[in-house]
Length: 88
Image 1 (spheres, rainbow, N blue to C red):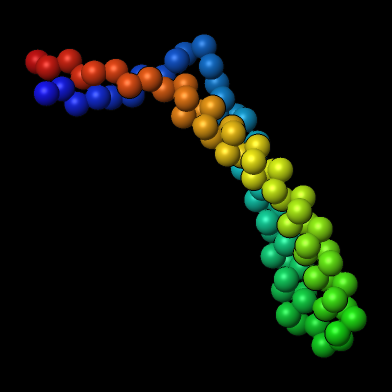
Image 2 (image 1 turned 30 degrees about the vertical axis):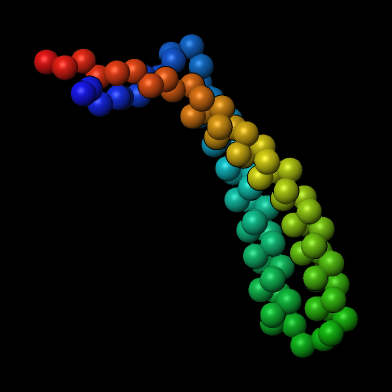
């Protein structure tokens, strides 16, 4: 039985959309991580509460970015077709 291999459609370049979406998600997660670090090091409860509000807002902003990233990745994967490997 032949094993399949992947053949890419040459007229589509969706990898740039994946890279762009990845950069946006990574940037947002970096901001969230920095806010969490600030919250952990804070000694004032009011500051911790304010930072938690910012974390919650940034997390809400990250959701559509994650959705875009998944969609871009799925589009990228969708540009590949399963093609049977030719036996020699």
